Image 1 (cartoon, rainbow, N blue to C red):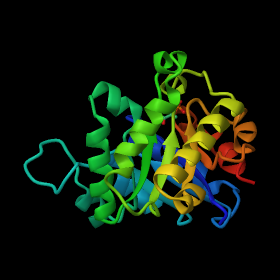
Image 2: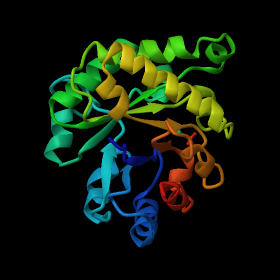
Image 3: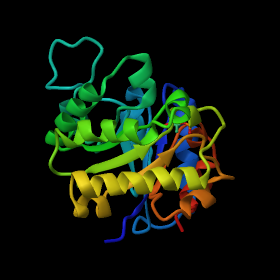
Length: 249
Ligand code: PEP
């Protein structure tokens, strides 16, 4: 089964009403491959989700950047999966390295969030990736397979999961992984999924790359057989995001 190319834009904690309008206008005017060829999902901060959902072209979807680990209630400052479903937000990013490192989200906590979000009907972009020290110590596959195993231990259906391999040393640094480095980890992850989950999941789950992807480096990365798309931070706030979407074809 062919895996549809996926391009996610993670706007992180950025934007004003006016800036969000500007980005949405650029996306709405863009000439990009059809939704049969590429799935595009943008992830604004929570406060802008209704604005973006109301104004964004209908062939692009919207994602939250986080959701609470269980049913909503007395959890000040959190946003529940149920609320996202109620607002008809189909996607959520979970386990982003900024949350893992700054907010100390553990593999187990992230996997509980993934399982809960899926149980409520959300689709999940689940982020994994090693730090520079871990890569230099030769621990890349150990780290990413442990992060993936934590998720695999909690879910059985991977249909609504996109796995985002985002080496921490490449996020927001301008130091993109080489196409060979990205391909090596993606292919190893697929082998790991075949051995530890199933050959069907290994074949069908989309593994996207994130970390300093831009308009200039996206095509070479996109040409790798196991790179099924991108999660884009900084460049998703700029018109070059359109070039990244176009790298699908
Ligand atoms: C990200 O935050 O998911 C990301 C990949 O950021 P950037 O593209 O800015 O490195």
